[in-house]
Image (cartoon, rainbow, N blue to C red; front, top):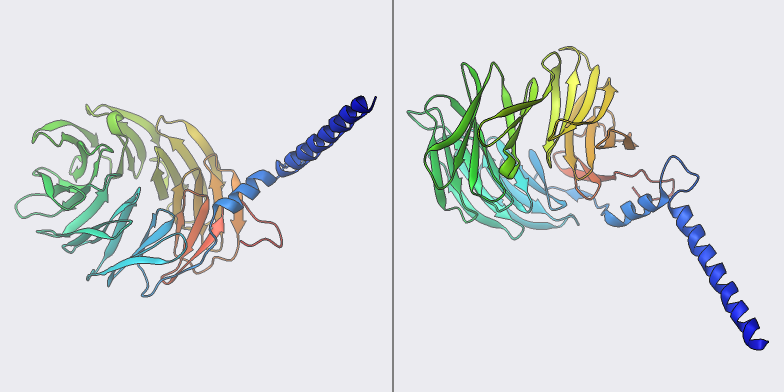
Length: 376
């Protein structure tokens, strides 16, 4: 009899504990609360550092760098980790500073000048002195650099460097102006964007051959940027269209918005965010997100001026003139912050925190809105 009573007590205690755990789980999951998920809010708060950044001296261009920030100004490069600690800096003069970063590698460069430096999480890995004026620069996830410059007698030069700054490939453009170039993730292939009187041209190369592998001409189009997808080719964003271009030069139109006016865009992880204005003046228009297959992930009307956009992970940060709005890829509103007037740039980190930047500061804002009493 006593043994039976003891078993009943144990069963009762187990049921009670299970009920408590279930109740807590339902509470965290936001059961009965259609507006939010408490578990998601909890995890988001755990995942993000809410540390303010101070830049001294100030910056003019910025890039996400492993959750921290790469900052470039007229005096050089500064790199901060996600705790807002200065990891390293490098001094060199730039009149028009720019920066590009990807997966722990980056390049800081002077548009219209000749100076560039490659860097990773430890510091500067190489300094590049171009022969002529720099037009653009990109790196891939291995830290390989595609540097596009002017070159006397040609309409552009693309030079590829490894992560240590060793020159490994050159291509001279003779028929159209070279704008930018991107390397494949495996560092074996190169795609170059050029523009001429007939439109935009994309040229593909293998780095083990000097011959063109394939090319395509997009007539009467102005393409702005390429995103390398590896073996499937590139995504191309233009003033009036998004295209998928295969390595054999075959073009697949994904979206035509030539009847609208491109205000801003963000290109990341095979997705494209667009802000399209209905008229050349005014702010009315729409926001849209499509993936690399052309599928529409989200569409939303807009009527505010956009200052800056950035995308990372599953989120898109849109800095309007008076506020910051963070959306998911379906353009559902995740968080709205009204205290961002005066900021000039935004960076969306992959961990779900957006950094709103001025020349001297960066303030973090969570992708999941906080309740009263919580820290931002």
